[in-house]
View 1 (cartoon, rainbow, N blue to C red):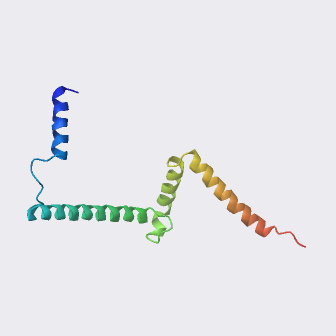
View 2 (view 1 turned 135 degrees about the horizontal axis):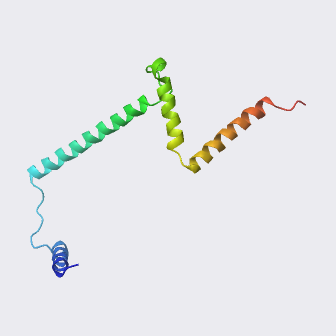
View 3 (view 1 turned 90 degrees about the vertical axis):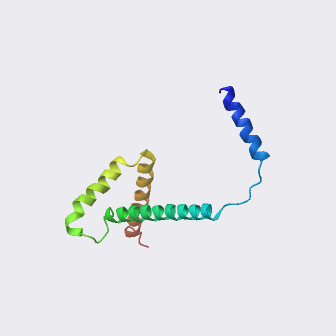
Length: 114
């Protein structure tokens, strides 16, 4: 680190702890700017969430929209997600869950008679 940067950092730290001028508050223009900025960020966030929700609805294989024409595409989407989007631990947990469910169903139908 050059000596100039060290001195600038020391001066900045000194100015923060012992400011030369006292902070007298924000102007109305600065407050309006901050409110507009926050409103813009909230609008971007809403738009992004709506887009993600719409994408989730479109990729849902159980959705009612255009069921007849898009089943192979949606099935392919699910299959590709299963093959590429999961790691080994996910496969193990999925297998454990399916095995447990199948075991419960099997034991329900194979009850011992007294």
